[in-house]
Image (cartoon, rainbow, N blue to C red; front, side):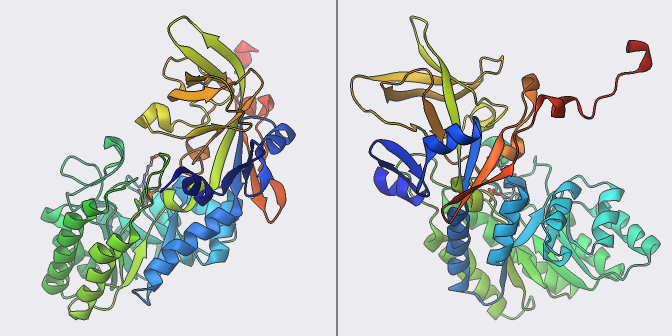
Length: 437
Ligand code: LLP
């Protein structure tokens, strides 16, 4: 994909050297709301949802898209996705609360945690949220909780670890023998047998092999193994599946010119074989679920920041900005690339290389290395792209910095959807013991 198309997919363009995002002049927004600032385009979220919806619709009748709330849990984004017909995947009670607070009914939620407490289970069971269990021992605990609450045992699902994982970074590969997630072959049949013995009578099954997958071929082995275990469980335990959940992981084009996720190949390797598996008639007539997070929200948001310090130490040039790894930790944590562009582009004079440095007191607080710009000066603004997934949700108050504001662009109007934190917010929940007062 050429650079202009790559930018326009993200609804970005330059007009008279000024950067526009969803038809808004980015610098004007940034001056109005202050920096750092997460700016989200409603249009892009809707477009990405429809992209996935069209792919699934072209092969299957029965499917649900569960947005992975961990990517971005802002209530307005949850509401946008719900209005498109989305379901949701939550990884914590807090994420379930977020969905309920956004007015999403609990029947649209899945709870795919990992290390659950009994309180987590109790909360999910009381709210009738479907749970993807992560271990055999959790089944025993959940069973006890159902018995003590005297709730009817209905649907239960387990996360299977197919041992073939993939992802943009080793921290985000979630299948394999040494990985903490899911149940391996040695216990998965037993898990369903036990669930049946305990009187659960509706079943789902789940995998999620990793995050930020750009090579679709990486799904192949995991899917083959997944399908054979589904058949094995159906046969040996004599059960049918109500849903098969393929997790998320669809990558996005972070690098200029990078191609988008190859859904044609995904159809060929995952969706069509799933349809054939159902047609064989041995596993019931399960619904397909997917759990995209990044794909739905990453490209919807730019993070704007102001340059306050330009420094040339004789060896290296630094652009010092007011967003750091407290605002976007992905470059520091995973070495991830986020493209960074100026809000006003002169493109005159010499291009120089800079590291974009945040204000955090660690040398690792670099948002981009060796990026080329011409004619930048202190006071100018930059936009960091693709910050809508795992941006705000992974932000922190490190170095006692209040979290940044979020705004939403919708049909020509900008809305503040989260106020920037104040310094008072940093102290709100602290208490000083009497002897120190
Ligand atoms: N489903 C489950 C069970 C997951 O654990 C995840 C992500 C997803 C769905 C959504 O994956 P996605 O479609 O967004 O790739 N902080 C990392 C990503 C961590 C993902 C964790 N699980 C990052 O910034 O790249």
